[in-house]
Length: 440
Ligand SMILES: NC(=O)c1ccc[n+]([C@@H]2O[C@H](COP(=O)([O-])OP(=O)(O)OC[C@H]3O[C@@H](n4cnc5c(N)ncnc54)[C@H](OP(=O)(O)O)[C@@H]3O)[C@@H](O)[C@H]2O)c1
Image 1 (cartoon, protein in one colour):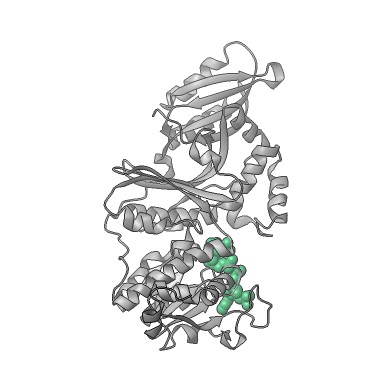
Image 2 (tube, rainbow, N blue to C red):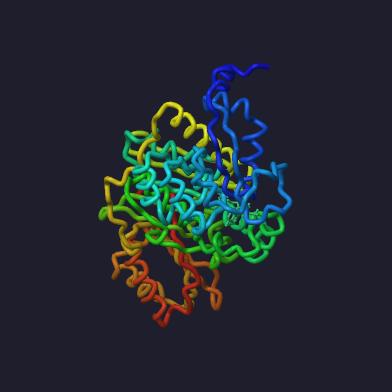
């Protein structure tokens, strides 16, 4: 069957594509570029020909059949070849990806990447290089895999004022926390299950310590607030210290624990943070199970929008990469460029101490009359208003569970240090932020 529009597209000179990396994502991009070449040609407006595939070891077996004659270990020569129009980078990490992309952009190529670490570190310089040399830079797959999120933020919401972006952007940690919630498993058992099922790497640090989510938060904040935000600007706490007891406490309060990326406008600028938080079970993000991702965007005129789907995996991520590839091809054929990155707002990223949220505090206290008054006073002294107090257990096992109203992070931290030193408090068992509550 003739694909509509395919004839005129086939008459055009092919656009030449250089693929850097042929691993989990790169192999799927290669497969789709070859298996769906007729449809992609019709949609893009010209054939898309892969003219080179840079890898580390050409002898390795591949997930998909790849034309071995295209393989090279010399990515630097490939990206500056005069016939190459589009470079797709799926190597990952900072180097050599950074040098290769700067060389490609400097040579006037258009670039597509899924590399969140690199974009979160060097977005501004990469965009500037693309702008000066006349190419495009697209990276939809760098945040939340298959979910169309960056383009809607950058283009569909360009006329609105984004107030807040709140999301689950790391599938590995969501899988672990979900298992802890549904089965009562502790962190290490849930991590072992995630590793056995291929959701977590052998070295899970980038995910469980929050680095991956912080890179994505930086990219989201940059686009949402038209400001240069890097991963170093993002406050980061991972899920290593989340205990089965925290999960059980959240459950008792009608909440679930999620690792959230939160970027929001605040009185002094913007805050960007990644940390575990309790959210009510009725919140839409609480329904995000397994390794799925979801991002809530709150904008002044649009109100609340939610984006949901597969945040990783070879094929889902390849879908986003190919969407960018078709967009870039269309731009090249029309002699246009995609929208510029905008950094005009230059909002300061305020320190975590100025972030405002609610807190859950669990204290192991001596069970005797009069204990509550000095504890309540410690909160009041720092201007942290208590919403609810509950006592669990009696005698040696007495626990006080305190939920606060919205308060400054710095005030809560000071309160906790005062509580830790109090004679009536045997231990501060748990402190966790609470997000997504209505009414404040
Ligand atoms: N995997 C996901 O689900 C996912 C989701 C969203 C975004 N991403 C992003 O997509 C990118 C790729 O991830 P991936 O999971 O596909 O990685 P991967 O499976 O580890 O593949 C990396 C590829 O890069 C090649 N490579 C490494 N060093 C190279 C060098 N110096 N020169 C040329 N090629 C080199 C490797 O070659 P060999 O095969 O010869 O070793 C391999 O083919 C990363 O930026 C990642 O953050 C991945």
